[in-house]
Length: 403
Picture (cartoon, helix red, strand yellow):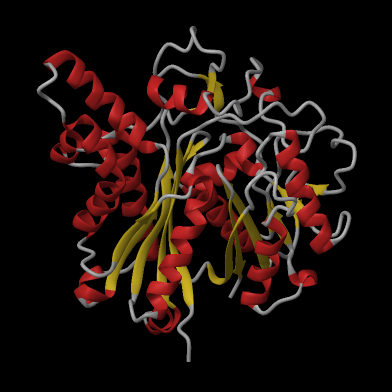
């Protein structure tokens, strides 16, 4: 019998809320964390808005040695992992050392780490050539720090697939559980609110240059002009269901289905592969489209990409066939952390019987036939579909079910 992977702990950090309850309250009340960046002076850049976590005092959550040895993104991940373990209410020493692991995702966080290293390189001379090497190793170090800090000595890994990474990491955690692990710390925390990270994202031409925070990130709307970048995400405690039930753990939900596809190269005349990812994820979960209660959209904020996603949802569920939401409009897109936070949000929606809103409101773009939720909606949420897409063609879809 295949082991089931359930989520028993959540640690979340977002621009509009620190911790799951503060974040969840902010989302339900449509409180946004998008504002003018203060981490660096954005005056010389065409994009000056971002989703920053400004109210967190890391010194209250981490020992001084870790603050000295790590960068900001790793610090956020360590704090979220600590909260996830605490929320799971588990004594990790009761789990065999080799049956507890870590699988996380990160995409942009290395830029902030690299920014610091390049500044050191510039100030200390060319002999300090470790900056690029350090940046290359950042992703593995991020996972490694969680493993060391939490004593997770089993299978560990890191995935890099841009915004899709959070779902891919959780899917790998499920595979690890199925191979015999008892628990896995998984998810993603990301962010690069620094000049180097900003320059990298601006080069894609996908960021919104709007000045009004309330009108800056408007997925599926006629005046959509791109996304707002943010920092944060969620780390989840994923556990073998049998072990979780044996210790009487609270189980938020099950990772019931997953699929990953890759878009064809431009010019081949083949359709985008997001719809296929949705269909495969539903098949993996052994459910039909009619059993899905809500879709958490990727919501790129780019008109063509929004249309591709809306078409995929409509093709599978029908016009206005399922409630669709994008709470990330209140946080910005969080790199690999965004999809993991969407999974956490879906679990809270199941817990409290409420579909969280998309903060952007107004008429949808012509031809987009979605039931877009723009205010908190009471609902019996038993099954949620979370979508995520990454730059270059990554598509991931995950089905999460209540227990």
